[in-house]
Structure formats: structure tokens, C-alpha cells
Image (tube, rainbow, N blue to C red; front, top):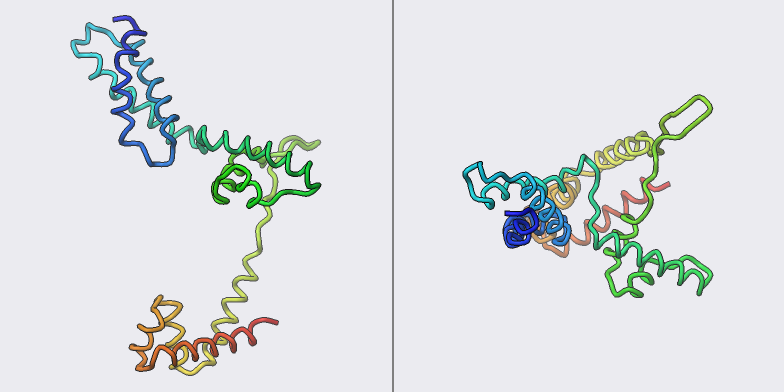
Length: 217
């Protein structure tokens, strides 16, 4: 069996192998392409002397090639469809910018191509050039510092909130605990506190207003 005929006659084998991987973050076309690459590799390496049929040998090779997509050496895989949409969005962005003299919004871009704002945002991020964390200086290569917010601010806010909660009476603290720490609805919290839902709603609004006034400078 020649390599080309072995591959051509077993395309259905590729489709059968990639079914289990569909819907797991990589588009069908990319899965199919990887599966075909695995099929070709299997055809190139298969030896009739092995004593097994070609499909038995090819299946693990095809699956291995598909799984490589998900590993991909630790890098992020961007599907072909997302890359193509990103390029279309970039062209549309340039066109709208030239027409209006300003940067178009995500909503304007998504409406122009008939896609959702979420899809447009994801595609633009995928199409953006990667940012290097290394820079070349006179002393050689060094790492770039990534700006991050200092944790002190968040810690201070948490401590301030705890102090203000401690100033509330036990019933009010329990109401807020049930609503925001236990995730209870107002109706459920009302039953727990022997109150009505309307009473819980009014008291909750009052407590949040008090806390806001005390915490926001």
C-alpha cells in the first residue's frame, strides 16, 4: 500500500478519531488538519511486516498528533477561525478609523462584521502581537518588570471593612453575612431572620448606604 493511497483511503478514520476532541477549545478544522498530519505520518512509518492492519497502527498516531495541539509545547493555541476574524477586524478597524478620524469601539467593529462583542474582543486579543518580557540593554538581555497593583491597598480596604462590620449590631452583621457570604436570597435570609423580604431589602439598602459613607472618602 503506497503512502498516498493509505492516507486517502482512511480519511474517515481521522474523522472518527477527532470526535472525542470536538468542543474542547480547538476548532474542528484544526483538529482535522492535525489528524490528517497524523494519518500521513502513520502511512509513512507503517510496515506490513508488523502483522496488524493499517488502521490499528494509525489510530494512536492520529490521536497523538491531535493531543499535541492541546499540549503545543506550553504555548497558547489560537484557532484558524479566530485568527482570520482577528485579521478582518484589524482591516475593519483601519477602515472605520480613516472614515471617522477616531478609534472605533468594540461594538462598532462587531456590528460591522456581524459578530458578538465578546467574539470581537477575543479575536482582537488573539491577533495582537505578543509582548516580549525581555528587553535588550547596554548590559545585555534583562527582564521587563510587569506593573502590578500593590497589595497594601486591598489589605487596607479589607481591614477597614472588617472594622466597620464590627461596629454593626449582631442582627445587621448576620443579615449581611447571609446575603453576601452565604449567597442567600433576600427571601431566604428573611426566613432565617424572622423578617419579611421587604424588611430585609430595606435594611440591607440602609446598611450598604451606611458602610459606603464610612468607607468612601
